[in-house]
Image 1: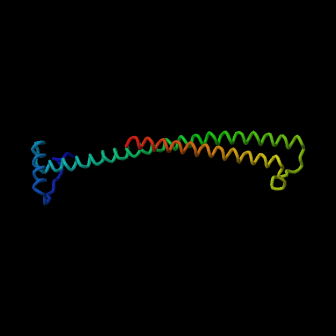
Image 2: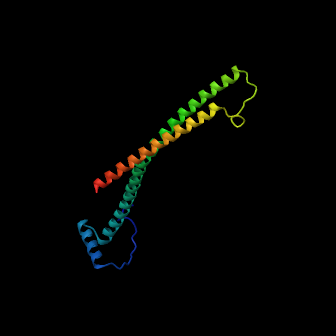
Length: 156
């Protein structure tokens, strides 16, 4: 049903002189009545509102994709590291199972029961490596932050 075929109802609105002039201009430009010009403007408003909503939604989506790209990259790196650790752990378990079987051990003596000198040395070595890696990461992040600050200051 087109606008001319629809049943129209009268309405009374108080409008400023400026708004009335704009309606007259729109009616003259579109070679239609003032009532039809108002209807066209209302239709245009709702069409633009939908377009603005789509544009707003797309903008948010683009921003999220941009920001989440960094998170996805970090998650992929974590997953790769996790896969390597999982693989290495499974290999060690297979070696330990073989060692236990070949030596026909009857019981497992845990580190809670008895900690060998070698175990203590291994723990110390691992702690040192973890500390060293953590320090490297902190140094890298500090350098990165300083570089970003220098760039932002040079842009100002």
